[in-house]
Each structure stands twice: as C-alpha cells, then as structure tokens.
Amino acid sequence: MKRQRQTVCVQGLGFVGAAMAVAVSLSRDNSGNCRYDVIGVELPTEEGFRRVESINEGQFPLPTIDQSLVLATRNSVAEGNLSATTDQSVYEKAEVVIIDVALDIPIGIDSREINFSVLEEAAKTVGRSVRPGTLVIIETTVAPGTCEKIIIPILAKECKKRNLPEDSILVAHSYERVMPGNKYLDSIINFWRVFAGYTGDAAYSCRQFLETIINTKNFPLTELSSLASSETAKIMENSYRAANIAFIDEWTKFAEAIGIDLFEIIRAISIRPTHSNIRYPGVGVGGYCLTKDPLFAPAAASQIFNLSGLSFPFIDLTQKINQRMPYHVVDRLDQMFDMSLSRKRILIFGVSYRSDIGDSRYTPTETLVRELETRDAVVLLNDPLVEFWDEMERPVPSQLPDQSVDGVILAVAHTSYKQAQIFDWILNHSDVIVDAVDFFTAKEICLFETKGLRVCSIGRGGVKNHE
Image (cartoon, rainbow, N blue to C red; front, side, top):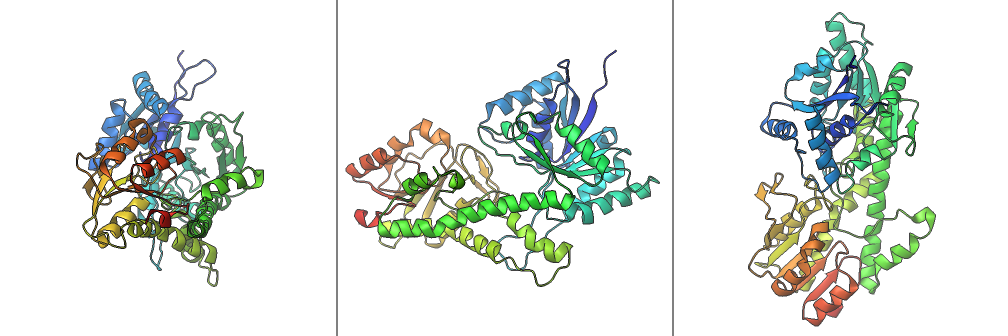
C-alpha cells in the first residue's frame, strides 16, 4: 500500500520561500520516495500569478545561476510533488506551513516603525484554515518578540473563532540563512540551522521536520530556549556582519589617502583564524537583510516591548556609515574628472546588491545612480541577471552598448563579467575606470594604464598617480 505523503505549504515564493519549497520537495524517505507534497502559495497579484505559473511549468521563478536549483525545480515538478497556487484554501491540507513573507521597516529615516500588516494578514490566513496539530514555522526574519506577541495571538484568535483550543497550532521559529548565488540551494540543505519552539511539542515537531530537509549529520541543528532568542539570533547575526562592513569604511579611506592596498592588508590579517571573516572594501551594503535587520532591535524595544531608555548607538552608526559608502565611490569618480561629472556618460556594471544574483532590493547601486544623476551625469546600466529594475522603474540591458562612455564603475563582480571578458570592451570604449569590488587583477590594471586609461580602485591609494 502506497504511503500518503504529508503536505507542506510554503507561504510566499520570494527569494527565500521559492528556494525553500524546492529544498523541501527534495526530501526522501528511507526507500527513496518523496516524503512531502510541497505547495507554494502566493497572493493573486500579477507577480504572484507569474511566480506560480513559472513553478508549475518547472521553472524557478527568480533569476539564479545555481543550476542545481534550476534542475531540482524541474525534476520535482515532473515528479509531481512540487506545485504552486494562489488558492489560499490549500492550507487546510497542510501538516506543515512555512511562513516566508516580507516584514518591512523604513530605512534611512529617524522614525522607524515596523509595518506588521503583511505578516499579520499572512498569520490570519493560516490561522483560519490549518487543522489542529499543524506545525507553523516562521522563517521570515522578524523583530524579537514578533512570534510570541503578534503571530501567536493572531493564530489563537483564529482558532477560537473556529471553536478550537487556542493552542491548537504548533508554532516554531527557524530563520533562514539563504545565500542566493551559485550555492543557493546548498545554503538551505547543507548549512547550519537555528530554531526554537513555543512549546516542547512545537520544538520537537520542528526538529523532526528540519532533520528531513537539512543535512544535519554534517550541519547539526541548534535549538534555542525561546522564540525571542531565535528571533534575536538572526537580528544580531546580521547586525554583526553589517558592523563588520562599516568598520572597513574608515580604513578604506585611510588606505586610499596614504597610497596603500587595503586588500592585501586584509588578506594578511585574515590568515589569523580569529580574524578570518573580516570584510573587504566595496560599494556599500545592500539587499533585503543587512540593510534593515539591525533596525529591528531598536524597533522591537520600543514598538513590541514598550521599553524606554534603551539606545543602540552602534547600530545607528553602522547604518549611517553603510548608507554613505556609495557616495565615496562617486566622489572618487568625480576626482577622476576634475570634479565635473556634468553630461559625462557613466556605465555601471551591476545593479543587483551582490554578485551572481538577480535581487535589486536596497542595492547600493541605487544610491550610485541617484547621486550621479544629481551631479548631472548620464547613467547607463548593465546587469546580466536583472532585466527590469523595479525600484527605479528602469529596464536594465544585459548587452553592452555600442557607443563609448566616459567612464565605468564596477559595482558588482558577477561571474559572467569575467566570462564575457568585459576587459576588452572597457579597453576600447572607456577612458576612466572605478573598480569598487576588486574585480580587475593588478596585471589587468597595469595593462589598462599602459593603454592610457585612468584606473581608480576603492580601497587602494593611487588617484593622484592618474591626475
């Protein structure tokens, strides 16, 4: 007799949810059979319908260079255990629901208040439908206190409306560490996980489920004592990384000022095991995590816990420094043109917030573009993974222009740029280069200079040598 598979619903098919749905669909029992029927659930919007259609056609719905993820999506759909829908009633079938919807907070303003509306509506939708005993895992990055003080009360209220015990639903938090890129899928299946359950039963069920998805033999799970601890771990984790990046900013400017190479210095420092994760100079912080997650701590203190008198000066300073970093890149370019960028044609290589992904949310390139245009430059764009820049409402060519430009900025080190040999194009179409991501080798920079191009590298001194 064929064993009936459990149903797992993934709510939200963005960069985390879509990949998580595929990862869950790959789980197999001891006989090699599919363990779960996975249903990705989206809202009935234009983008929601597009993502649902893509998955049901066997295509991963977002840009990716990870061919293992592309192949896994196709195979799971063909196998019949991965599908997507906008029909919210499917939660009735689920033994497990994974919530992967957005939780936003304004960035760059003094008054920061979390907008819980999307997450609250998501919790209500789940609470109206799921059966008693269903495991609900919040994978969304949330402010400390969100699960216990916002999500669980909503689920309890919905259960009460259905004449069910208010604690009918098992709630756990297990934050994602998804890293889109060439190891997108691997960053879920073969990576460490932290989790916590609201009750002992919820923690047990969450552990049992995660152990069927993740290679826990090599990447053991870490169980924390409370939901708030798990929520805080994610926020602190990303705050640490954002602070690490901000720390490099002043050293970047120092190295440039005295004519030394910060990259070789950091490589020397990082040999020491205690300093192996020190960051490198760059355009700035971008993406949906590092830009906003640190802000959840002060917001939680005031908005969720009603605490007064707590301050987060380190987080505040980190945010200010990281938001200013792209302006330094523009300043360096401005110096190359004798402080006059007016009507200069500047091509930016890279719109996404980091290499080898197609995600443009909070990309530092946006600040680059806005500041260049404020200084009256004419900005051209190129990115092989971003076809349309939603936030700026602009198409992004993947092909290089036929016409020459006055200068280029290497803002994102996509692997395909190396493969496309943009070196030759720049050599023949530009006079000035700002390498903001350590893209070109010393040999390539030397060759540029021998051909008469002026090169500036963020984190390396030498602008004066090109005047």
